Amino acid sequence: MNQNNMILSGDSKLDEQINNWRQWDGNPQTQNEISKAVENKEWDALKSRLCIRINFGTAGLRAEMRAGFDSMNDLVVVQTAQGLCEYLKNQYPDKSTWSGRGIVIGYDARHNSKRFAELSAAVFLCGKFRVYLFKQFAATPIVPYTIKKLNCLAGVQVTASHNPKQDNGYKVYWSNGAQIISPHDTGIQESILNNLKPMEDYWSVNEQALWSKPLLSNPYDKVVPAYFEALKEEIPSSFIQANDECPLKFAYTPMHGVGYPYVEEAFKQINLKNVCLVPVSEQVEPDPEFPTTPMPNPEEGKQSLDLAIKTATEENCQIILANDPDADRLAVAEISDNNKYKLFSGNELGALLGWWSKQIYNMKEPHGDISNCVMIASTVSSKILKSMAAVEGFIFHETLTGFKWMGNKAIEEELAGKKVLFAFEEAIGFMVSTNVVDKDGVSAAAHVATMARYLRCEKSMTLQDKLRDIYETYGYHTSICSYCICRDQVLIRKIFQRLRTFDNGKENTYPKSILNGEFEIEHVRDLTTGYDSSTADKRATLPVSSSSQMITFTFKNGLVVTLRTSGTEPKMKYYAEMCGKPEDQCWDVLTATLNRMVEAIVNEFYEPEKNQLQRKSAD
Image 1 (cartoon, rainbow, N blue to C red):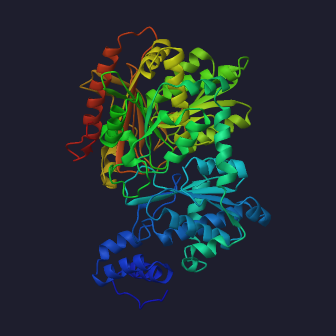
Image 2 (image 1 turned 60 degrees about the vertical axis):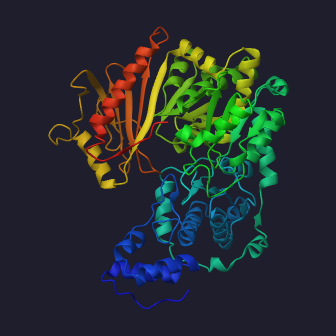
Image 3 (image 1 turned 45 degrees about the vertical axis):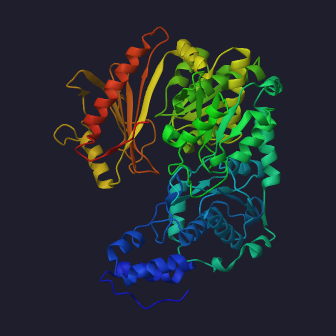
C-alpha cells in the first residue's frame, strides 16, 4: 500500500482521511473507488464517506458495501476486528483464554460475507486467539449457540439479516451468548478508534494459508448436531413420535438465504417426513442477488411471500414458513380450504408460541412450578404474555426493544434460578427455551410445525382456531405495527422534538389527545429523554438512550402506542395495541377503534404529507 502525495481538497481533515485510506486499505477495488472520487474532486461525497465513521452500536455494524469509513468494506471490517480483539484482551487479560476459549465467526450468503469473516479470522489469529470459523454458511442462531457450547469469549456473525442486497453487517455476541449491550458496545467502539491502522497485511493471507493455522478450525461437527439434539430435548417425546403421522405440508422459503439445510435437518430430527417440507424452488438456494425478492424481509407480507403463497397453493400446503436470509426470524401463514391465506403478525405468533411454550413445559414437567417460570417480551410487542401471566401465574418481564435486551434478561433470570420458557418481539423474532439466547428462526419453525400438527390432529384446530381460543381465554389483543420511511435524520429529530415540546416549545409537554380531544392521553414515557409522566419522580424505569427516538403514549381507553426510530433501517415505526379483557366480546369494535386511532396518531404526530414521509405500501 503506497502513500500518495498529500491531496489538496481545501480541507485538512479530509486530506488526512484520504491519505489514511490510501495507506491502510489493501483492497484494489475500494482503493480505486476513492482514487476516482479524488480525481473527479468529489469532495462532498468524500467528506461523507471518509470524515463520518460508521458507529459500532448494540446492533454491531450494518451499512451499504462500498469504499469509505461510513460503509461496510474490507478496511472497516479489519479495523472493527482489531478493536474487538484488543477489547477482549483487556477484558480477559489471561492470555491462555485467548488460545483456549477463543472466538467463533460465522457468515451468511451475502456478497463479501465470507471474505469479511476470513479477514476477521486473520486478525484474531494474529492476536493469538483460537478461531472457530465456519466453512459453510451459518444460520445466525448457530453462532450464539456455539459460544455457549464451546465456552467462547465472543462471537461474530457477518450478516445484514433482511436488508437489501447492497448491505452487509457485523453482529457481535458476548461470552454469555447474548448480543452485546452497554458498556461493551461503547467499549468496543472506543477500542476500534484506538486501533484503526492495520497491524498486519491481512490482505496477503489467502484461504489456503489461513486454514493452515493450527489455531483455526471449523466448529460445525462439534456444535450443529448438538444444536439439533438440544432442540429435540425441548419437545415432548410423545409429540416427536406423533409427528411421524403428520398430515400437514409446509411450504418453506429461506428467502435466498441460508435457512433451508438447517430447517430441513430440524424437520428430520423432530420426525417430520421429507414430504412435509416443500421448499419454494425459486428461493431455496442461497443467492446474494435476491433475484426474486429485492426486499428479502418476510415481515413485509405478500410483497415478499408471493412465491411461497404460489408454492403452497400448487402443492396443497396448509402452512407457509418463511425465514429471513440469515434464518433468525420466522414468518408464518396458514392456507384455508378456499386457498385464502392468513399471514400471522409477530404479535399473533407470540401469543401462539407463548401458549405452546407453557403447553410443552406442562407436558415435560407435570409437577413443575409455573410460578418459577418466566416469559419475556419487548416493550413495543403485544402485552398478551402479560395477560397470560396474570391468569396462569408465571412471571412476565418487559424489556427495551431488541433481543440484546431480552437475551440478557433471560440470562439474568436463569442466574436467579428461574426457568425461562419463551421470549419474543413483534418483528417476528422468537426464542423458545434458552438453548440460544437470541431469536432463532430454525427452532421456531420446528416448534410451529409440531404445534400445528398437534392442534390439527389432536384438537381438530387450525392455528387461527387456537389464536381465537387464546383471545377468549386471556382477552382480545389487536395491534398495528407499521412505519413511515424517512432518510433525513435532522427531520426525524425535528418531528420527535415537536412531540416533546408540544406546548409552545416548553420542555416535557406532549400532546394531550387526538381527534380534537376525542381520545385523551393518560401517560407519556419518553425513553430518549428519560421522562415518564406516570412515575412519582417523572423518571422512566427502563434504560434510556439519547441516541435513538422512542416515545410511548398510553390513552385513557387503553390503547398504547410507541413511536420509535429503527436502528438498522430508515424507518419511523409505530406500534399500537388495544387489549381487551376476556369478558370483552365486541372484538370488531376494538379493532375499528384501533384502526381509527392509529390513523389519527400517524397523521397528527408524524404528519407524513407535511414532512414528505413515505408510508408503508399496503399489501
